[in-house]
Length: 294
Image 1 (tube, rainbow, N blue to C red):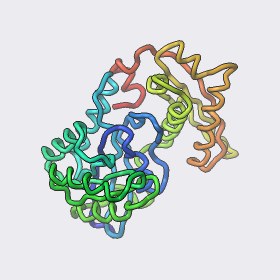
Image 2: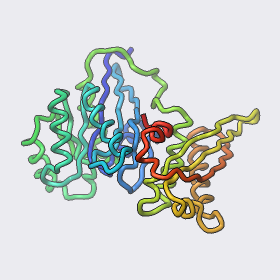
Image 3: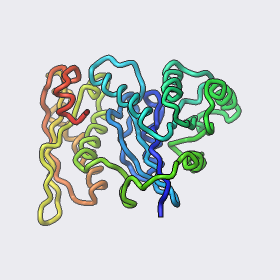
Image 4: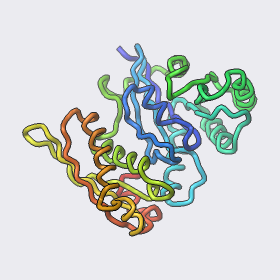
């Protein structure tokens, strides 16, 4: 029986590996990942049960200087997450010295008066001796409950990190059923998978101006799932890039997404995609809400 639980916000700058770590901790892919900044837009919940303790990790958007109303929304998600949890997990690069974004997050953790653990990610990419300067810099900045080098990619140090975070869980009721690993509905997971493929396949500003809406999600009697998805972009020229010559790019994106959807849903999927233009939707509060960012 579980008698301890904790909500833990994973925070850090863009591209530091928060979603990769979330997936590693949960053991399933619940958060999309790409090599582009600001991949995560919403707060994503991942649930892990360890003995008598339930840990609920909140994967948050990268903390950055916003340039659009969507960016404002993403940064507000991070700020709210730090103030609404039992503990914070600050994820940083293995760079000696505390960056401006990290210093700002530390101040927010301090103001929220929540215990925090520091994880230095990508430790597999540097000499172990160089981590001492990173540890020293952050230890001087804040009284972290633990400072651990990890690799979200390889799993190195993640078990030790979970052990430290588990110590921070107060007594309290189980927040989610034992067989639940995320609070995201299947439609949202499918939309995010499609957006991930846009991020992987497209360059420059094009994928950052896209949003995905699932307009139909139906299971047939034979178990096949029919999914209709609309990809929104901000410019007609972007629509042409997404569709590609003779529709080849959209076909590639859709095929990659369908394969991942079939793994997720454990079923054959028939995916149809359309592309529409919604100019400057990232500056419209109404459209931002309509696309599920609320």
